[in-house]
Amino acid sequence: MRVLLSRPLTAEVEARARAEFDVEIRSSTAVMSADEMQRALVQFDVVMPTLGDAFDAQVFSKVPDPRCKLLANFGVGINHIDVVAARAAGIEVSNTPGAVTDATADIAMTLMLMSARRAGEGERLLRSGQWQGWHPTQLLGLHLSGKQVGIVGMGRIGQAIARRCHYGFGMRVSYLARSAKELDFAADRAASLIALASEVDILVVAVPGGAETRHLINAEVLEAMQPSAHLINISRGEVIDEAALIAALQGGQIGGAGLDVYEFEPVVPQALMVLDNVSLLPHLGTATQEVRSDMGHMVLDNVAAFAAGRVLPNPV
Image 1 (cartoon, one colour):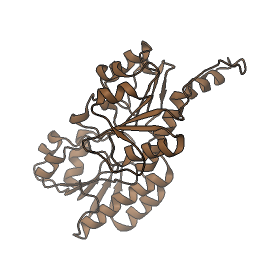
Image 2: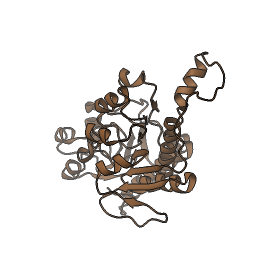
Image 3: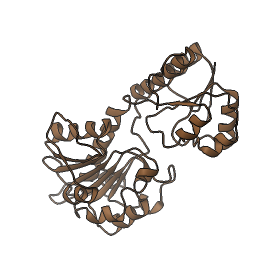
Image 4: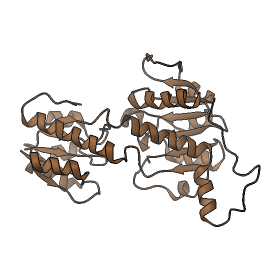
């Protein structure tokens, strides 16, 4: 059972992988090239892709008889894998749900506080040596407690964010989802995205990536938001029309934004980086030692089940 891990992982996960499988660990942290993906499908029984490794229909078409029979994705999001094309090629796909929920929700709260309280702007002022000391009207931001938050996508992560907002900050929760959710706190289901955007102080995007949600947050949605409202994205970059967001931020159309993901990641437009009313993080959603190790072990649990002919713990 030959296994390819497409990125370096935590020491404990790599040690387990070497102990249990004939494993090759790719040393590069960059996304896999088309040639690398094709080689992986030919030479390995299991491949662990992750964010940016675009296993699309064209890649599968170049390898008509792949040795690989499982793509054990590192991460819950699978918008970089054409699952239909993979199955047509005889390849199963698994992912790592659950492990990412709380860490991603924590980053959403980090960005909410950073954006609403202008923390990034304040840190840049301090580091520049231009801070002249405290005064009553300096860097006045938005007080989160008691405000209304709108969650776009009420899956595991969306619910974890909403729960933190409700119990931690006493915020009123509204959400947009395909169906009503049974929750352990009060929350109102919005009739539409425009209606949700127009009434909340914070709009948080927590939907999967992919064709169905590309540019879900567009100029129309941004125009519907209140001038003091903040937009937070911890889902996938392409869910937001980045050009429309830049225009809205440049024109002061919304109060601010907090982003952990980008439409053309890792490229971040200079027009976005020079703005003071946006807080930017380098895709830190699950970046803790514990969570990344848990994700790695989930990958290996899927590999072990596959090797033993058992049902995958986390099939897509």
